[in-house]
Length: 73
Image (cartoon, rainbow, N blue to C red):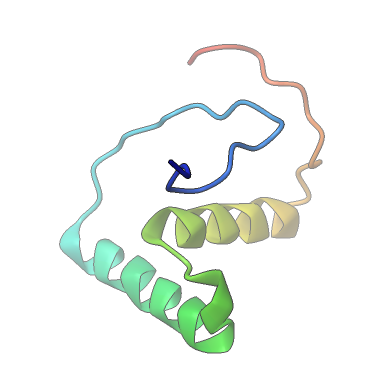
């Protein structure tokens, strides 16, 4: 039987949970919808939108992409 879901990536990922106000969540969902409209084959999720937004914000703040994690916060 074929496996379903997203393929595993080479790098392990940490699961992170946090609370967001409804207004911010609505903005993230709207951004995810925009990503789906721009690239329908990608089927962007809320998590994809959060990753894209965080990456763009950190890039804009001048944070290096390959910084080594210091461990759990």
